[in-house]
Image (tube, rainbow, N blue to C red; front, side, top):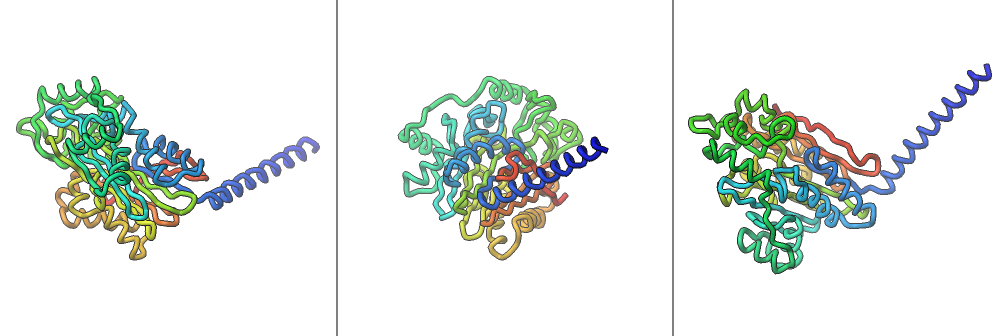
Length: 364
């Protein structure tokens, strides 16, 4: 009986301790309402860098810049930053935008030789009267601001590019994003064949692409990182950075550096960002649309869903062959997402949990 009594007392104490712990977590979340959300699974590490800034008293703007720099520096990430796959001519060009909840924003596009375009975008916002600098002018500005010029084409990315050149024939295909074969080994020639980039190929995804996990929204089909943050004072900010489509036409720019397309933030309402095929996001002013839908009273998830549906309604044939995802957070910190295809996920970091990864619902 003594053993049974001891066991019951221990169980009761354990349950009480768990209840107190849960209450403490809830209280902490209430007392520290900051939150960070970002696209894809590599957003977890980025969120944690942003969270470190927020818990140290930093602003949402500081947080999203710090967070975006993490994937930009990741040599294993071939769709963001210094290890991004090049265009068809072998040039690595990067795009990024950053926006504060008060409307201030900055962006760079087709920027070469600078490892952290998100930080250059912030300098554009803070040091110039402009919003967007591109190409050689963006590089000149970055160097004047003290950024270091360096070669961004890594040996692995260069090898992948040479493999593409052996058999690839560029055909603008909205279904293709930087990809990797199972096991992390880059297989651009197989990806090109699967996605119709070889002579005589179709531009539509095939069963081969699905088998390689390259179908839009597949596990090996990640691209842009978009990040949204709410700081302890309730202010919002966002960042979006990418190296864009692999083997793209030289000079191609997607939605990431376009304020209102790849990113939009308004302290009065909320913030939104996008991922996927940038051309469709630009055509629909996607992130601005999501924020305006929240302004009309929709939840973040409802707003993202309507933006996705609008893309599908305007271009139903293309929509079934591509991936576009939206991620949003309102001014109260509520987050939600929606995508065209299954496979899109987003990372959430707050006082309750710092490494949450949530599968977004999809239209198809």
